[in-house]
Image 1 (cartoon, rainbow, N blue to C red):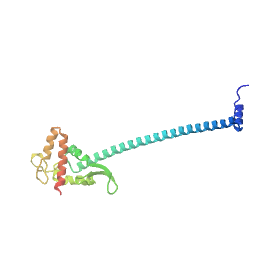
Image 2 (tube, helix red, strand yellow; image 1 turned 120 degrees about the vertical axis):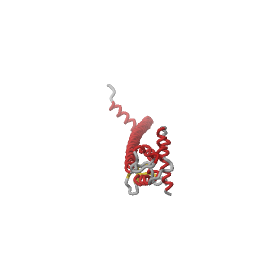
Image 3 (spheres, rainbow, N blue to C red; image 1 turned 135 degrees about the horizontal axis):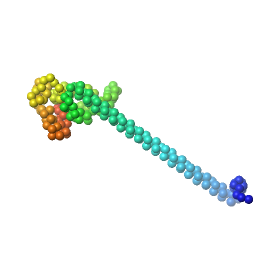
Length: 203
C-alpha cells in the first residue's frame, strides 16, 4: 500500500495521546512548531502593518508638501496682485513699480487680519503688521512716497516734489543712475531707505 496521510495522522494523534516518553516529546515538538509558526506569522503581520503605516505616512507627507507648495504659490500670487493693485491705486509712476515691489515684497505676507479675514498684510517700520491699504496710504502721504507718485506739478531735475518742494535727496535721479549701472541692489536699497526716512520723519 502507498502512503496514506489520514492513516499517518491517526497514528500521530494516537502517539500524542499515549503517556509514553515518545508521545510526550512529540507533544513538546508540536507545541514548539506551532509556537514558532505563530511567531513567524506575527512578525510577518507586524512587518506588513509597518509597511502600510510607512506608506501612509509617506503619502500624507507628500500631500502636505503639495498643499504647502500650492498655498505658497497662492500667497505669492496674492501678494503680487496686492502690490500691483496698491501701487496702481496710489498712482505710482510705472518706471518705479518694479523697484518698489522688490523693496516691499519682503514686508508682505498673507495672514488673517484682526477681523479674521485672510488677506495681504504689511510690516511697517515699527514692526507692526497692518493691512496693505493702510501701509500704502501712509507711504503715499509721505514726502518720500510722493517722489514716486504721479503729480500734476513737478520740480526741477525731473523729480516729483511734495507740496511743490524738492526732496533733499533726489532719490529718483539716484535710483535712475543705479538702474543705468544695472545696480539693482542699490536701486532697491534706495527705495527702502526712502520709505524708512518717511517713517522716521513722522515721529
